Amino acid sequence: MFGSLDASNFSGSVPFYDNEFEKILSKISTCYQLMKTDKVVLENDENKIRDILLLNYLKNNEIRRKIDLIQWHFEREVQEDHSIGRTDIKVISPNTFEKQEAYYILECKRLDNTNTNGTTGLNAKYIENGIDRFITKYYSSYYRVNGMIGFVVEDLKIHENVKSINTLLTTSFPSIATKQEITKDSFIDDFEYHYNSIHADKDNEELKIYHLMFDLSENIQG
Image: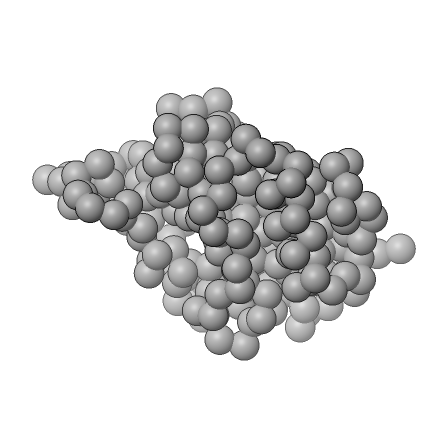
């Protein structure tokens, strides 16, 4: 009964569940646009920004119905059953009720304009405490596809900053096997700052990571 859900049953190229996950990400980007429209005031705190996105939008029943998000469920700070990771956002789909491992993960990270090319800035943390957690299997990747959300909290040229993250990725993090650098994507209409990258995890299995960059610099108080 579970064969269609088991990623290990597919032969040939690594099976990416791109279509479903891209739909989820497009809905999340709509919630971001609603946050901007609502002029939500935010603290410069990763967890507090995530919580407002999650509790006020992704788990808001009225919004979920309005943007057709009701088939997915979102949970925060969830301890995984089969890895040591504690996910920022766990995305539960109808498949999860048949196969408990069949869920997606979103990792959230702040980004600012301080030391963008250095190994102590938030760009480096985006890699070290974000991308690398998928590569090392600190977070699981049942579908071989997961995502990251960059909360841009200061005025920043986002495309240029992605180039800086790529430079750090290839020069300062040699343990991360990158098959495709973070590359601009186009599956979300009217939202420019979405990307994807492809890597090999510690078991040399291919893994795709989507990246959403949300410019919240005008929403940060102070």
